[in-house]
Image (cartoon, rainbow, N blue to C red):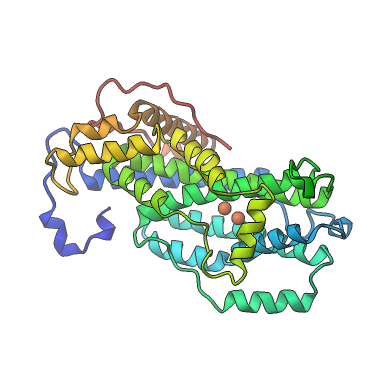
Length: 367
Ligand SMILES: [Fe+2]
Ligand SMILES: [Fe+2]
């Protein structure tokens, strides 16, 4: 985290106890992990998800009689995704010193840009919005700038974990509707294979994004448990979907999405928060709050490596260690395939602060 501190503060930081990793070393390990993960991700993205917003879908065959609620939803998806240049530029700027993270954000931005174009095509080919209407709508949206929800890298990383999962869920539920599988009476029997394919294709990208940010959050959790858990607590305390305050018809959109059974507070709790918690070895929101409170009862030295042992009771560090190890095995295999291992292999270094009973029993998340 040295990059977030002004240079004159570096000497004031607590010294590292013998046998512990210094913050500089932790930052180096996290950066290496991100870099290796980014290289793996890019190769996989090009091999398996190299679709095109125009050519990958039979747009002329899109259902011309979709109910107006669904057009409202598709239009809202488009409105959020079309802030891709703002999301990308803000995040790149925030992590510009990290090769792995800043290059990843460019790749990520190129994928989000496709989502915006695909949803815009869906609005157009629904036949229910004129090109002029779309032009005016875009103009209104672009007159506002999306800004980072949090000032620092770790909070934004954690925010993105939850946001990507929530977005994936929205699209998967849209896919179900377009496959005729809605449980809502007013949406039963709708079939649009083109819309279903669009929603599914984009949902697969969102799952890959979720996994990338999740792996990153796990590395932070493993090397910086205290500040990562606090960031998770802060993010879920004020989570909302990106650009909610910028989109003029957001209220209508979110109500429609809710009524369509696509996304609402219950979905966030059950299918976003609890899923991410499970992937991060956190039992529940309550246990997270309690764990943070307990660590505060024991004196420690803010920002240093004198962390209290109470933090290790807050999450399943054995699971997280297993997941971080597995990530490194994946990176090592990728690097061997290229020959990077001959020069400078990425290797897993255990955090000596982690209690010894850490075991390799977690489940790896993969896309
Ligand atoms: Fe997206
Ligand atoms: Fe995404």
